[in-house]
Length: 390
Image 1 (cartoon, rainbow, N blue to C red):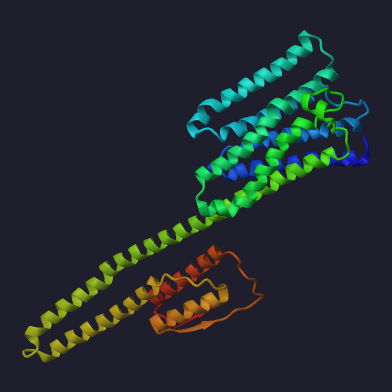
Image 2 (tube, rainbow, N blue to C red; image 1 turned 90 degrees about the vertical axis):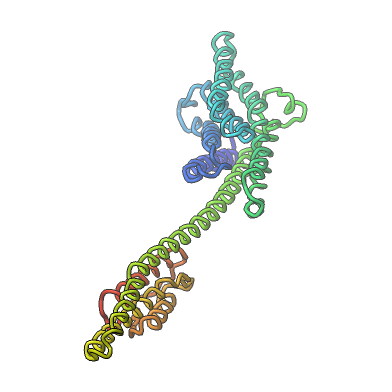
């Protein structure tokens, strides 16, 4: 095996191993996305493909020639392609059908494939090397080829069923890359078979390319396309979902704030105004009989109304729900200007240290909301004459 072939096999295994790790990570984060709900099957396929690609290289590095019995790698490859076929088939199933039949489907395919392999090996005493090559060809023809095509068609079908047109348009290039590379993977398994095997398609077309120096690089390119397309499509979907969730959370926070402020208005300000009205009514009978007492009561009414006006200003400040989308420092300055207008308190703003921009809009809004709440509490409880934000 030439150096180029060794490097190609290594790249082949490395790309699919990376795909397996990526799929497992995305599967953990993407369970609520129907398009990626069953990525575990694709991860199993990628890991099996990586182990099979590295088998020949690792075998060459050990003194014994083979570090595993020759019967093991074909079983690994068959298991990987069964995972790919199940993943392709589940894209055509409803969720209920998948839950009822996926495990049984995997067990039947695994039992038939591994059982036939073991039967040929032990009952009919077939040569191990010849059986391993024949098993690989059959796995590529009967499992990998339909699995790749079904996955390409099924993902396209699922995207139209589960995604709205706008989001589907955003991830369409990434999905198209997955569809093309998965279909290419399936077709290549018809022609790229081990040398020395008179396979139907490969024997007639003359494509015995497994020993070629370019084979590993071809598989690596296909795996890289699958990985890039999968990561781009799912991260785009995640970004859209998180943006939507952020918007919903902001609306919920606004609704909670308004409900709280409305309750406070009813319990505090309205009651104060109502009490002032009752007090004014009690002044009417004593205006002529006891002017001093009437004047004192009117003074208390004026004081109560002044306090009520201050509360109303504070609540108006709280009700301003348009958070600034600027960076942190301009956003705080904007809050302080509103605070001064609504409370008539003098404000100071001091910034020390090195400024670092906060790129997350959600994080900026959270910090600004903390500042706003602190200012509102200051106006309500501190009896302050001026406010400094440092």
